Amino acid sequence: MGKKVFVDLTHPFSAEQPRWPYFDKPVLDAPHSMAKGGVLTQKMTITMHTGTHCDAPRHVMEYEFDGRRARYTHEMDIDAYTGDAICLPVEIEPWGLITDKHLDAACAKIGFDPKALEGMVLCLDTGMHKYYDDSKAYYHYAAGVGIDAGRWIVKHKPKCVAMDSQALDHPLHTAMGNNGMTRMNLLGASGRPLHEEYTELFGEKANAEFDKFEYIRIYGQDAYDKKFGDLEAFGNWGTWEPCHKLMLGNGIVGVENLGGDLAKVSGKRFRFYCFPLRWYMGDGSMARCVAEIDADQLNDVPERTYQYGGTGYADAAGGGASGIAYIQKLFNRNK
Image (cartoon, rainbow, N blue to C red; front, top):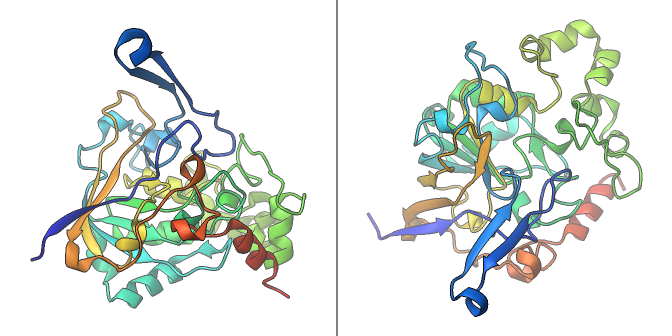
């Protein structure tokens, strides 16, 4: 066994950090300063689902699938987000929907048997962490999971799933698309709603996966009930964050916006540490995520350097990637 090292898998925190489209900007203040009072104390007002953070079941559900009231942060086991981990490198096209087939392929690529996942922490490296910024590339056009990946996760029973993208679901499964009471139906790079762009690129049947009413129109109510009915039976909107609800409703917690030096541990096994605040009746919490791994197991890649405003996706030299190139690749896919 080689020397153990710690690898930071957390995006930097600041008042200027990227945030989900309908969250308020973090407010940081310093009631005391060195010049004025000889001490520095700071305070913040922030949505706890900003940056790298944990989700508790109560975040998206009133009841878990075993019938109990959905648990708050303080009701989860102290090691709910911590344990032996594997990071799967998921190959997916821009804005693609990750399915069970993609997860099986990622396991096969690194020679990992998904039957071994039970009780582990599953980290997903989709490459989206490279685009972390206040941008359409990271939020609107992220690759992400849906109901088929959610069922794969429930089948293999990890204790926690940590994803390197904006949410535990594809953006069109969220309120950025045409889902839920809080839906925003945001405009994309073309100035048209995201679901219209997606339909143009991938077809109306592909878009129907994210839209309850389109799915019913195209496939019929019986087909919808077969695919999403178990979610609807618990009072959930089936196409609205289905992976969130399948996971959390089955007691599998989640981490969103995993980042930092994730590339150093992609495809590897390690010990994952993540502890939310011991927050009474919390729906989730910002957290520091860290991997402990043998030094000789690290991937030989540069350390992630964050540039302006604590982000820097546009500067590939900083370990990020060009959001403009990502969007261009997406819209040029059929040319």
